[in-house]
Length: 141
Image (cartoon, rainbow, N blue to C red; front, side):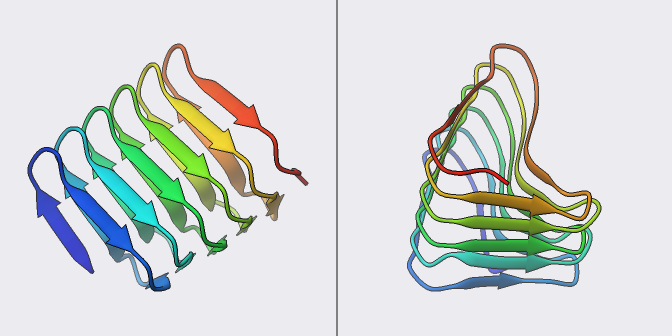
């Protein structure tokens, strides 16, 4: 794990590129009201590899850089209610079991403003829970 935080109200500003593989986690936060500003983009490959993992309610993730997710990896995963993910950069998801944004929780919002390109059996946005909103303003293929 690159950055690991246990506690509420965590803030992570990631300006460089996040490169995660081999089942690792780039940013791993356990706690409510976490905010991650990912400006540098990320490359996530391999099963169980996760770029940004948050276990907690009211998380906010801003993905401003370009993201490449493949071979079973997950870009952003949030387990908690009232989460918001803003995907402003372009995201490419390729391969069975690969997911760009995955959220398990109620009352969540994903704003997809960047291009989302999904192939090979991957998932662009995967939400499990009630009262979810996806606002797609970017292109999707």
